[in-house]
Length: 146
Image 1 (cartoon, rainbow, N blue to C red):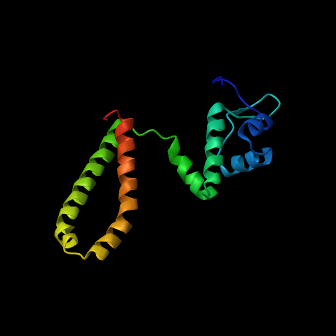
Image 2: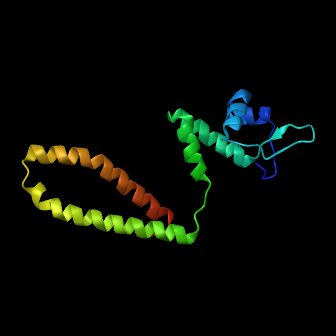
Image 3: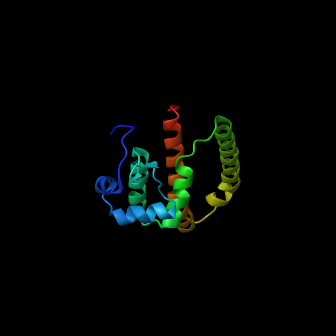
């Protein structure tokens, strides 16, 4: 697709696989907005809007509410300045160090648990831990650190 290509509602509707009425609704909610208006006052939407619309459709399929989608999209396109990202990474590092200290502090307690008790503790802990590790691995891979 060309960067300068603009779509009228009908065209956008066909490409995105949603009804023109849905596009009107998402526009009225502020989920998407037209790039500009044509000389005949048609709303014209950009490729960026198409990408955003496809993201909304995907999130709807994943059973997110429109309010959740709106909150997610409001932060989706925002790029953080390098200082903000660096600050967030420092906070993450501090938090990880705190978690490491907490794990070391509870190691003696866990080692004294009966096998059934330990299994129950780890059964609740493993999904959250795996999700956290996966998020960190993605972050490291995106940054080219691995």
